[in-house]
Image (cartoon, rainbow over all chains, first blue to last red; front, side, top):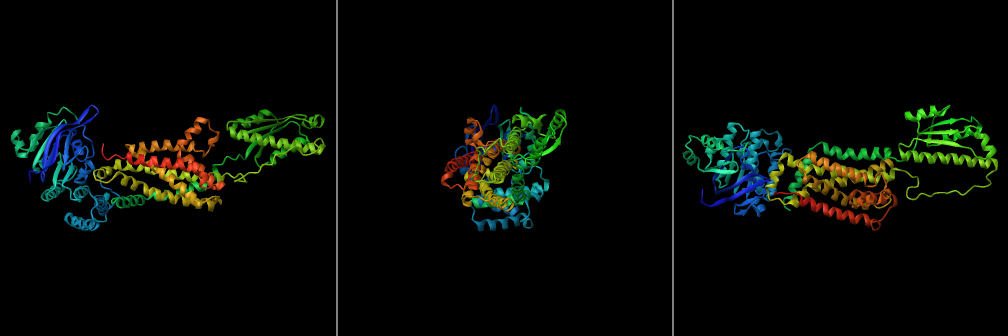
Length: 247
Length: 368
């Protein structure tokens, strides 16, 4: 991990009418870091993440991702990031290989490189037999691993993961985090939201959002000291209890 | 434009993996070309009449026979009195009652004139009106015939001999077929694109696209091009069907038919995609598109001629792309009009297409 800053948000805000989904959040993420973005349902995590990915315009504040302003240079931002949404969003009427070829092509990767990477990737995941399988017939855990691999297929410098392990069994969750670690080892910055507190412990640093604000930010060890908890669960519970917003 | 071939490959695969779509592309033109020209006819035939012959004379029976012999009428019943005939009209068995007066023959010989009363069911105004004029014609001819026989009419009075141009047999099929091709197209390459982008929104796959640097033009082109190829296939296939089934072929150039339809397909697929871009779910897109299709069809001149509409409605039809294609197609099919003659249709259609396609690209938002 270096001190180079790849995500920088200052007073980032998103309002929908009178409702402030994300309320002036300020934080920085360093290159190669695994940054956990925690918060109860409706705390504003997905909204913040969508602004950082250039899908949504901030109502106020600024943010840069990979050095580009998310409000104006969002198409540049998109060249440097990968994104895995909360809802599975690969084409389930295309095969595993066809999905990878499609997104490789969209990011203008050379054909040969795409071919080689697919072989390599399917080997790594143990998916060789599923190369020509329609994505819709894969089990959920496999789909999630594939979605993650696709999000980093074009070798982005940052990958955003929105609840990537929701509904996935513990074993697959473990394997999934191994993939995340491997990506981080390759220098990819990982920005991840989760509801699993054991996963929060795997992160280098964690922020916790309550009612659209970031109420805590630090390494899991620091936060546990600060909130006098034994686990991240205690920290999260102490903060989430203060929330005024319902689900 | 590096991503376009990949996006197109994806669209074609998805289109043909959905088994229903290719089946519809084949079956809908067959159904439209085979069935609709036979049933969507405005010719009035098989009108049922009831005759009340109060005279029972030679001359009154001859009139009844004339009515019976007409290709337009079926003599449903001869009734003893008006009430019986009126009951038949009430229950819907007959649409016309012809009452031949008492002393019909006597009056004719004596005064040279006699009365025939015609009662018409005018619920369907057009049927009633046309039927009435056929009836009048038959009665008048009969009167003339009697005039010759008696020598009261010396020579043939002035007669009008119409000469019908472009569709000598006044056949309804060559008039309907070109318009039906335009209708088949809007149902397929107008409606299906409307469900396309919004379908990706519903499935969530649009997120994965929006987060890539793919350009809006490339994405929209990848959505349109497959429908263009399908549309061009449908035009060719429908023309072939019209020729094989009804023997209807364009009097003008086949290439001109294709040229017009390409611009038209471009226009309606752009409109469909624009609606899709604005919609949040497929139901919404379908209802909005359905609204437009119904309005477009009703004001296109497909059924009622534009020239008979009120002035404001005629002006409003200028906003209807279907109007231009249906007019142009009928002119090419029946009159054999040339490109130059059809410029008043071609230019608005091109402007429409250009605006709609720009709108389709602009309304696709990757960032909001």
